[in-house]
Length: 213
Image (tube, rainbow, N blue to C red):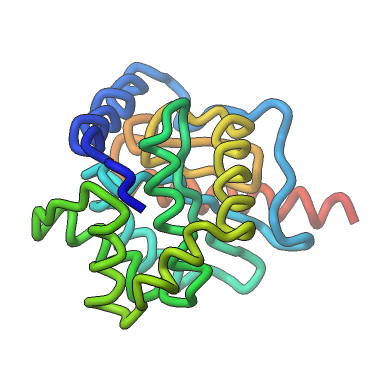
């Protein structure tokens, strides 16, 4: 289980560069072509595309959670760990889905973020993450390893990589609204504006559904 993650800290800075690259865009969103289906039929969907070592993702995540508490019942918030072309992105996606598989995501998601950005904890190998899960969720190393190597986690990681590509994601954090639009805070002018624009797009999608009936 000694998988080294030494490039995480360097790669984390890529989200700063990639996010800023959108600053000159005129529209507050980009259309996804072709549109992608939502995970839950009959629901509107917002997908938070993130990466644990990205400081912007760490900042946005609690604001997005607070915003999501006031969403109507017809909207679902989904989290998607971004996976680009190298294995370092996939390794942190594995950690996210291990937490989900072991039913400790509510505890570990915020803790992983905080351990990296607030506590500056050196999480360089899967052994380090196993210790973190043991410390904060009581998960044994054996159960962590079993989940890490499970078919379910592998399938979810593969799907995350597929969706990262299908959504056309090239910066984190990004929001994907109803499989049709992708946005970053640089496109909208800030985090507050990002959530406001998501509300507008959700309203438009809702009206579109009503008109189609």
